[in-house]
Length: 213
Image 1 (cartoon, one colour):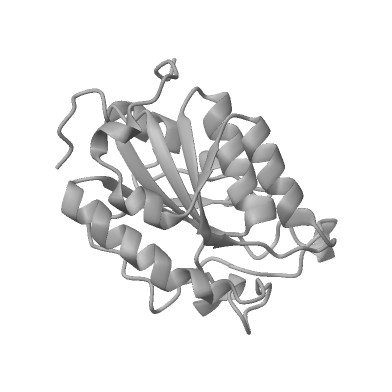
Image 2 (image 1 turned 120 degrees about the vertical axis):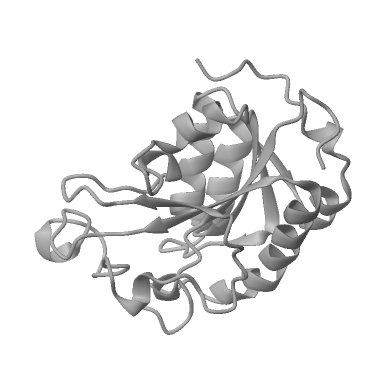
């Protein structure tokens, strides 16, 4: 359990869905390699009483996100389809808080902070209500949804740690993932391997950032 009243971390798993894994509609090369690492993080978070969030793309069939309607991407993670389901080996516990994003047909929906929980609460509001000031990010893809989630987290005054072996990028352009990591670092995020997070005491998550407004 978390021992310090000032330590309020959460684990955020970004878009580990079938369509973003190999053979999916928009597969990240070797994207499923992150699943065992994330599962270890989940088990550790459960053991320490750390809140677990899992974001998912949850697009309508018609959206400006898709190429047919002016967007950049082929159809993927359409609401209710098998491609939108979480990877079958991802061991999300019943207590995980699912955050759906990309539900607005007029918005891109990259960042988890554009999403909402099952009861319609924006992610930032849910974190605030639980006193969470620090998030640890994993998932797909480094250069899009992970990047934008990190940038929004730091903009909101949250501490952010990115587990570098628990993310993978799509690299539409060579070097996109490396550039994304550089932008995260410049924004104030910490980049660490999961082993560092798994062995860190809860007090290590006491951020020096202000609370969410």
